[in-house]
Length: 186
Image (cartoon, rainbow, N blue to C red):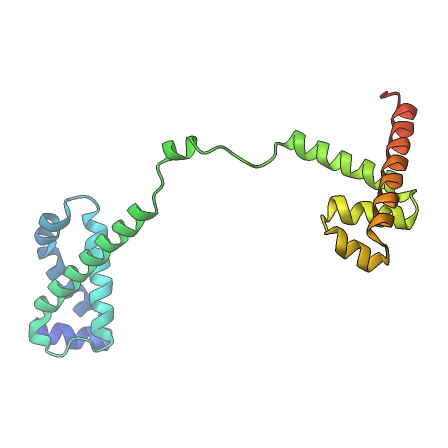
C-alpha cells in the first residue's frame, strides 16, 4: 500500500490501512529506542499509533505522501510533552527527607480531647451564670473583643465593665472549685 492509500484507508476507518500504519511504525521503533531508550517501547509505539491515526482521521495530515514525516513530527512532539511532564513532576516532587524536619503543628488527639473536655466544662459552668456575666466573659476572653466595643454594646462604662468582670471572674472561680470538689478532683 502507498502512503496515500494508507491515509485514505485510515480516514475511511479500514482496519487493513490501520494495520499497515502499525507495520510502518514497527520500523520506526529503532528511532524511538535511540531517543527514549528501550523501556516501555511497546507502549510508546502504541501511543504514537493512536495519536497519529487519530489526527489523520481528523484530517490533520494535508499531504498523504508525507506520512512518515508527519509521524516523525508527532513522535517528536510526544517526546517534548514527555519531557515537559517530567519537568513538572520534578518541580512538584518534595523529598520525604525534607518533610522529616518540619514539625507537625497539629494538636495531638490527647490535646484535642482535653480541649473539648475543658470547653464542655466551661459551657456547663457558664450555663448557670447570669446573662450579663456570661456575655462579658465570653466576649472578653473567648472572642477577644476590645473593652470599648463591649462597653458600647452592653451599655456600660469602663469602670462598670471592670467591676462586673472581676465579680464574674470570682463567681466563675467559685463555681469551678465547687464543681471540682464535687467530682473529688480538689
